[in-house]
Length: 472
Image 1 (cartoon, rainbow, N blue to C red):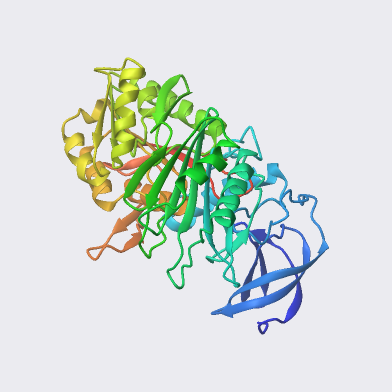
Image 2: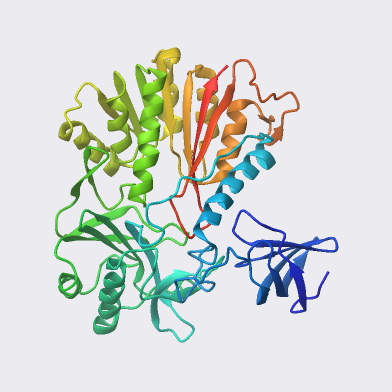
């Protein structure tokens, strides 16, 4: 074990789930970001506790063939990307390994995972920009992304995983802060005005939301004028977030300029979107994921499909075309209003309906009203996964087929473990591996038919995964 700031040389043996290199030195395991398997690296110990260490790469002594030159000048400083130094084909294999390892380590499920479905674009793929605004050590306003595991903002003018319009957004807001004397938000002192800028692009239209800690958005007309120099079609929303937590949005939205929502097409579905409506950030991968999900529902011959966490209803509409009825459940009221418009825009009256509410509240009653043998459940929850109450309702329902979609391999493995019986829940809510679990399936529970990762987030450690399950 090395002392803090002590340098040593090691061979990177593998890559971890967060994209960091792994090296064993005696009984201590060190994690070193931005290194590649097979590389000989000079490292500096940063922190060691309980035989787990964190180190910084000082010099790559023997670079691996899989190493490439990062496109971003702020790579290793900004916490947004972890894998720009790794060849894209190796990124895809790494993400498959991440999913496989999560299923095995967390749930005890050993399943072959194919290579991750690639993105058509390795850079400039994001249709959403979410960027914090704060102050630096000198009290000057700054716009950028957080450094890894901190809320220290790394100033940014452009980001290679965002299209060029993101640079125009940052430029306009930098001018707004400087010209109008508006300050970024100081999280420590809880002073200042502008906290976040959130932008959604749909077919050349931009929904821009300025999130402030104050009840008003200062100099609205000046901000609109600056944005008009950069964008032909946009709406400006003001959101108030005066809380102390890490959430980006507060509960209050106010339209300042432009239309309230925009209309677009995806996967043959006409849809609309507002400032607080969920859309997948990578259009090309979203299409591949949703088309495979709809194909799965068609292959099951489902009479009814339930789309839990349904967002603005794009996937629900696709599922409605494969079944007698598709029912979406979504907690965000704005998104449900958009999904109701999808019904009318795509002439799906009688084929698609939407329920506004939390999945854990609405799903049990809905499951009780359908024929479980002729119903498919599609669940695409947020990173925290499916609520335990909803999982219990699914298990009690006997529903025949499930497609689980998740951007978090850890919570996905946990939820799949509970559905298959690989994990059991104790009376106090703790989870433990079930020694009676069989990969062939347990009666009354589910077995895994397929696992397929999708690279929704190139250059980052994150991966979207679809797991298909069938009840035994």
